[in-house]
Amino acid sequence: MTAAPRLRAAAPDPADGLRAHCEALRVHADRLRAAAGELERQGPPAAPFRAEVAALAERCSTAADGLALAAARLQDR
Image (cartoon, rainbow, N blue to C red; front, side, top):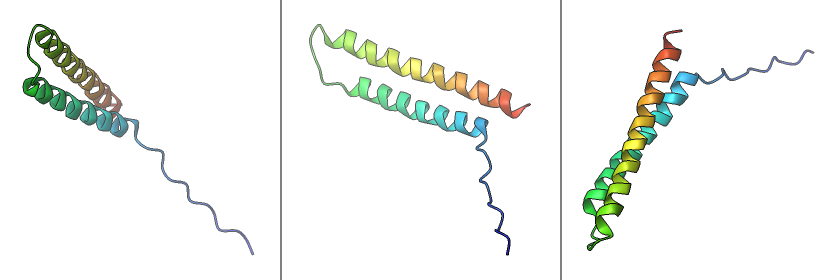
């Protein structure tokens, strides 16, 4: 009696992983933008805090764009 061959799961597609991370970053950016607009803080420290949250949202969007580009390049290989 011979042992049945083990079936290996196919390696995940790197482009799919990049696209998933890209989508997660876009969701985070949207949440941060919404949170920045809804902040109830008032006074002198509020504006810089909102600006920091908005800048973080922009960084998330920029990173998402980079991941999308990398995924597209991997897909074209």
